[in-house]
Image 1 (cartoon, one colour):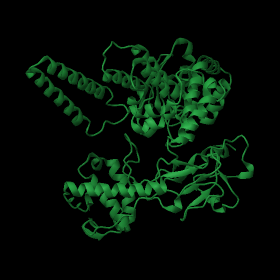
Image 2: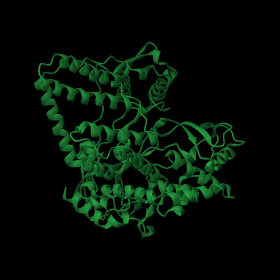
Image 3: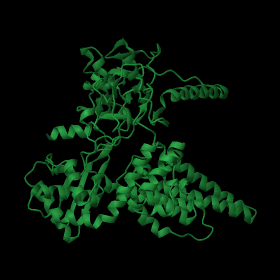
Image 4: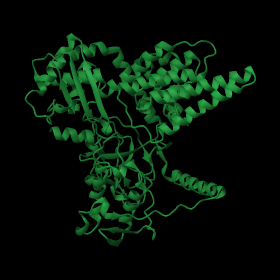
Length: 579
């Protein structure tokens, strides 16, 4: 029964018409429901959905200059599949990746499978990879012509695959091109780094269409699932995870979903004390299972930790509160402190200390109890899943789930920071205001542990800014007029802020929280107050994602979800459809 419920969640409540018998073998879904069995309570996102499928990268074309390699002294002419992998590795030669033993071992485990048995134990040092041909130097005109040709081809493909017709409205699709095969790079110390991501083919894809829609030519599987927002999906051959193709963030369906997500966080803000009281009382329950669930919720709240076995529809699986192992916790003699150290989502290290007030010491005592007598690799909260957590939270506040806490905490970090900067002296330059907005964004990223590995060019880029600052300082010394000095001083101040921002945000990805966790209404309200165009805080892509905010009145930016829901729902639909 539990497995069926888990499969139901994975399947995204897939619906299939009896005519689509081939969908019964749809691997990602595992569980498919017939139309007659769909609950009336299940939300239908559309009545009609039509599109042309998705686009695939072109097949690999063998090159006689790179189709041979040497293994253990023997020259081998490679198949296109072998050559594609060999060339991908050759492109990484000279980078730190190929020196990484894990990266090497993972690559060889996939690459050598394509060769005869006698080569299966080869090491990287036994292989002479093909030398990449030198790239032809193109003239400026040739580069321009090539760019124009590529753009033309992409626009042609986008016209065919980049749009769906949803309830009669032409709507943009977000990721309409399948990712090409290649080396899996991973983030941080991902154990699968260096593995090969195989090519995805038509027969791997399942399309979501309405019952009467014409099916695009090809070997696709087809289902009819109006309660799902995705256009197509497939199982990633390397990770085993389901990948989805979505409507663009600017679509009315996605806009309404985003607004609903932030509204739920607002609801939590209003009921947070009641929820925390419920969690606290439950941590003292006589029922061990309830104590476990409540303690998981306590960690999710206090540390903005992910629940563990739950993921967003377009995310990979995560490690979090419910999937903690004994080895991830370190206790001292204190009853108010515990240290955490583990690799979370995308194998980014999650290292924090939880210190609680004496009134919450039951949380630490519970953790010690749940770890007692277990081996290091055993689960702290064995038997507890995201379903238990969300059912529990729903009792504390209707509709509340674990995911809402991260949105709530990220948004509140921004709110709390910006309260200190609600007014600026007259004449304050725009970049000073943007800097404070970025610092608020950084506070949210730190709270949610959105760490990153700095780009390879980080130091080089930063040094260019420092060099530019030195040049301005020299110019300032030689400036002949006060006007020149004033102009240089402004440019110096701006670049100093850029350097400070780069140094402070070096280890954090601000875009993740900005895109997914911070309620944009908070930034808009603050920006309006300090005389800043809120859009400068968002890229063009994110401005389209946050377009629903533009249609809101000033009063509705602070209204409760119930007060603004009806009017804003209409506003978002009208605005999105008019685009």
